[in-house]
Image 1 (cartoon, rainbow, N blue to C red):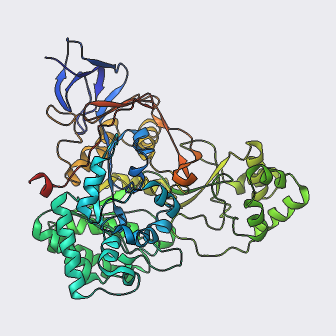
Image 2 (cartoon, rainbow, N blue to C red):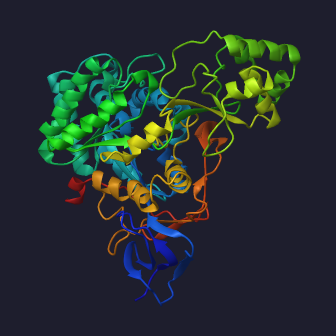
Image 3 (spheres, rainbow, N blue to C red):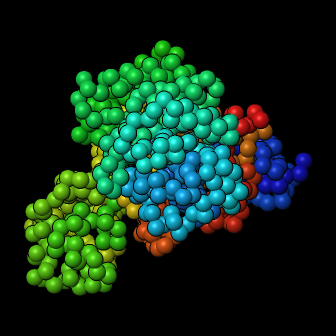
Length: 568
């Protein structure tokens, strides 16, 4: 038997959760052709001695809808073993939309997902109107990983309603028009329909994004349209605000919709301190729904959701008067200002006393909580709070922050957790039977968080460091569980006949690296980047796209279309 690629001498962690085993993996074209001992030489060879061979990781919650146009390398997720990503979450997509109305989708996305309008204008050549046309355009782009996508509710509303989508309910005729475009999108390969109800998603003029304006009856009609076609997942960013009593009607309505439509429902579940026990309620909701025959999956993150702060990105003090003047200057001038004793004294007093506003949304920088705001000095943690370091040194936390920044030529990052602050609760989320690892948000919040590294964090922290999960359990959570829940055919399992999307990693060293800030987006846009250690090779459709963290130039990625498109 002739092989295009042989991965030799590795240990296969196949994604099923069953025990790992020693084997070679032979690939012909884009498929796994043989698993066992291979004597023949392949056209290409990878020596995986001492390494694990696993299915490529599946990222189930991203916002790569815009980035795919200017980043064929799929960074940062591709650096962390991701071979397939699902974009279009939270109701935010670039289609359907006419080129002349692009500002309507930019308005929804630019604050809620921290993707600058100038970046999108510079980086996207608009060649579509409908969602089906958008998929075809993405299909034709060079890309090294795979993309599947929801059609987003906010884009769907602005396509049908225009400006009115930000303020008004839809008419019966408008809901019918949305339904027709949704059905067309599903038949073209959309993986489902997404929406958002959370008050975290607002425009820069503090209006709700269009999906939040919709009546529940509108959402119900659209999801039931998927039910009538027998295809599509429903992804929703949920209403977790208020009291347990005020949240229960939403939860009951979501359960009823899952049962009525017969479609799988999924949402992110995190422990947000000011939402009380909403995260427990959402886990219980999945249990009730599943017990009644519905399909409902919580996407859970494997660490704290945390804002990354620093002089090269954003600081909690940026809108305070003295700081605002300082931060408007080049970094070298900022450094000089911090070294001026009189100016520094004013900056410290202002950082400690404010006044701070309360208009932050989502993962935007907010007023510092000195007991939670930490020095970010390793990719995994644990981290020391600035309050504790200040107490040791007899100075203010703001002084600690400034000293750390000056000592690193303003390179030092800091982290302030927003959700999942207690890793004991994160463990409960991870181990819940109705959860999958998700919520990385790759492509969004690009200068605020860096959660594309979730797969390598899961392996480094929860497997190697804590031993809470076995390698087999963790790999399944990153692969087969997601492939089954999102109905990605022939992926998520190392098995003969499946697509050869694979990752080869060293269990002793796999981990996230430290992030860095870069102005490498179109129009000089700012983002955080984070690579990984310990990943020897990543393979997509039988082609090696990365060797030891470096891209090979191969572009085998494709659009993964839903079942109605596959049936055509």
